[in-house]
Image (cartoon, rainbow, N blue to C red):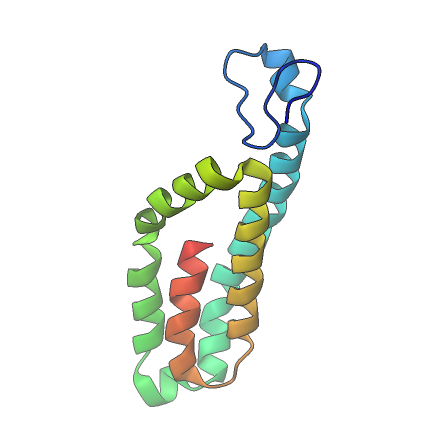
Length: 129
């Protein structure tokens, strides 16, 4: 479907549109809000994870192995770029942001589990977020 300006809303394609049209479009503002909240959530998660893992016994029982593992897994985030790009092409920007939000919620929900081995799954899901 298209709006009066010919911008395809389903895929979020704004190529060829004026910068003003892009900055005043729904996609831009939705991405700004989601990105701002997402970055805040991600930074809080990264900052709080060492404390969370310590409370689960990582330092005492595992010699900080889970913290080190998280650092390694987090650097592999680039692996998810093709998946996110393909999602954006198939579903559009707005729907892809909703998928990203769902992944973020899943990562934070897994982080609440008080069983330290499940945190490895949390690391992978969070990295995809």
